[in-house]
Image (cartoon, rainbow, N blue to C red):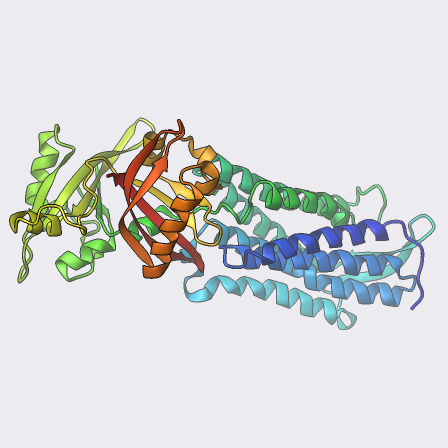
Length: 462
């Protein structure tokens, strides 16, 4: 194979190396939602850069065409992987049900086959030649109809993926908004470079500047991965957390219909609680007592009893709050904490025992840790109000980094947690933002979300 001197080989190699380094960083987070498509995309970008460097360094048109065909393994993969990454990262789970979404690979595979068989048709390239780029030869291509179909699919994939990320960012906290913008910006720079090349307005005709713009894209991705925690601070669907709670959660819309009810209610009705969704609240077997609390307007908390056929009555401590979006009232959220065991103990004269559940009238503080590194990924409003932290100062840090507990307290908790797989009413001292200490009862259990492991923790004052 005959080589030529081409100054653009070095930028291609640099882009490939940066992309490869980013891929190694992502590979350490394979259990996180979106990590596998992103890893594939970075490897495809790296392969494209390296093979384009070989094309630029080749002097003969036969070898340039050979490397151009190899390049397309990465080229056809990138739009599809970007689309799959954005959908998975934004947790559009329904899209992946039944695996129909993976039919998008049809366009990539079909285009790759047409590229590799281009000698027998002109669907991808209608004309292939070499042109002088200023002391070196560049491969010059004229494109056929199949290429433009592929290009249309590529741009549509980028557009859909970017819309998904932007829509997600509009309802995300600040640290997640920035992640989405970084991903869109990094991909957008390379797509702009591709448009400049195909429009024929590149400073050097027939030099594909798309891989060159990858250098800037890869630098942006590096900053996003290492500085702003892409794949470290991941959005967790609120419904997933609610489904994992032991307390019953019921959400009513303004019309009095049941908009949501979690699976904890299954235990009390010996059936699937989801059958109540969309039905009037009056169909709930506990509604007579709940309606009195709601109608009083003055009682956000109270106690209700649910009679269960064939079993002893269940007692619940109840918290009712209004669900709002900005200034608009959307409905009511009802949280039912089972206090049956406490009531039985009181009736039997045992008083408060070791198995007593959290007794504070306050809404429990809830915070979610990623099990892998103990970083906080979500907290509720009670956590912020009780401990005085700003959410932006909490998410992405561990309780130890915050000073929420010390190393000894952390060790005591995890020794109990790992021994049983969960803890209930673990006595613990927590420190607020003003360095004031208080005793809490802490309950925690492990939760698996999309191959990621999290620890959901609830605490009330002792």
